[in-house]
Image 1 (cartoon, rainbow, N blue to C red):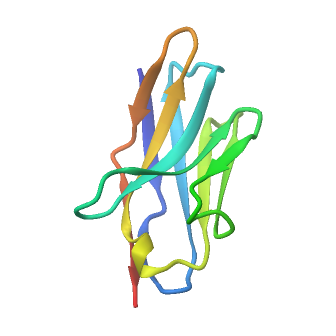
Image 2: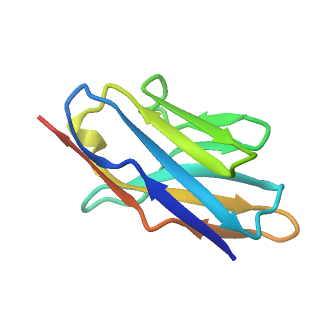
Length: 118
């Protein structure tokens, strides 16, 4: 079992910034990558960004340049720095832990709400 605890969501004005954190604990495999997804009301969950243990990152097109994902392997923590936030960024942000060895499994955090006001 892996537990994920997210923090850092909240209310911010358009153009503002927030930093999300997600700490993983439990049976952590070194063969994993972590990332952030989000789900806005009435929409499907979508990927925001992912980061491997080696530091390779992938971003959704609409977030690249505004959002930065980083990972502290020693602390099993992943961060998402969000800048230039827009109302369309309003969503629940979920932390994801994806393990591919010794077996494939995904864990999800409970989510943290980000609200961007106009």
